[in-house]
Length: 466
Image (cartoon, rainbow, N blue to C red; front, side):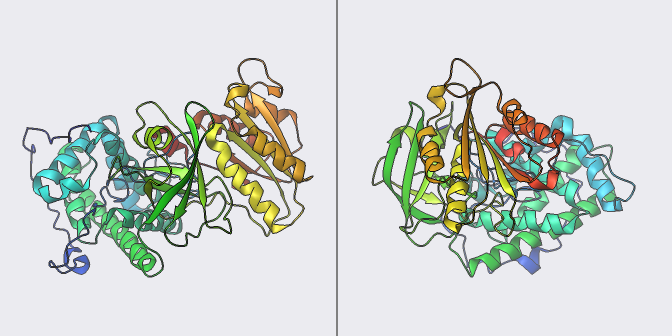
């Protein structure tokens, strides 16, 4: 296991922050109520991303699980894009302008800012260090993406609340407690004070305190509400492990209690071999009467969780599941057809949605384009073709980008462009980031409105580690 990341040796350059954690007493729980053994603080402004490779960060649709598990709690499908631009519109609030100025200044040194944040957190609150994963490299990026998202959504309370609510619920699996938020906020302000030397001042600090106070309250409230209805995680026994290729396995598990979810959603998984390290994977089937859950897992280079699930997991092993999340689901109130683009293991949620349509019994046209680099990588094509044979409303077209093939040749988006028209379809994309980007551009170019295009979070997929 990689050694813990040690805080920088140098002492903080300055300690001039006036931050006093105004919400500390309001959110504090009795000191005698310790956090669970596996507790994990919710770092970052959107305390979401700071704890263990948790889940999500930015905006976009469900980070899900295709090609490699994302490492943070993902934002719902359809969330706004959070590219690294910090321009403020004329209608932006004063606080939004101040937050975005700070983010614009620290963006070039975001790695230093986040490293400094964790150094402050672990020096000032050493009792929290064991709650984080041993290796902090991926963790650092997560904080910046959470900050970026908060700065961009501060003037959109409805979307921000939805985004943060999902993070708050997802962080229950880390043992995040309300009393962790003040420590995170204190160190966040300290890090920003240290690096945002040009944009920082009393007004800016006050804006960040207000923003973080609101953010933490939304997450705390969402977690408290969820606590009344669901456990923080589920134990799940591996009941089947099927190798499809040298680096892809279909893993089927049985949860220890009912696990409600929707086809197209995803969850986070922790293995016994890498405690406190979670990765995202989409459900590869619609809810089943026997309660079993299946995931398509591809072992990626240096992928701790994916490699463990593909190469080490065996029948009888027990893993942990976080709560289901994501909104890349079928709208059964609509008669629109479904245009689905699945690349690599991104075919998993597409397959689940096809099963969902079949179970609802409505005759809706579903067109699936299944992409891979070669025929060998179309590891689930037989399953998809059997579904097409059983349902006349379903068409499945394999698309191979490299080498000879029995299907279509070329890039997946180009193949989609040749068919159609798609004006009466809702589009779903799942797969590698590059495929999603080019696919979205293609779909918009052929006239499908953005609000009818759903996909996995590009931000999360870029950060996917496995």
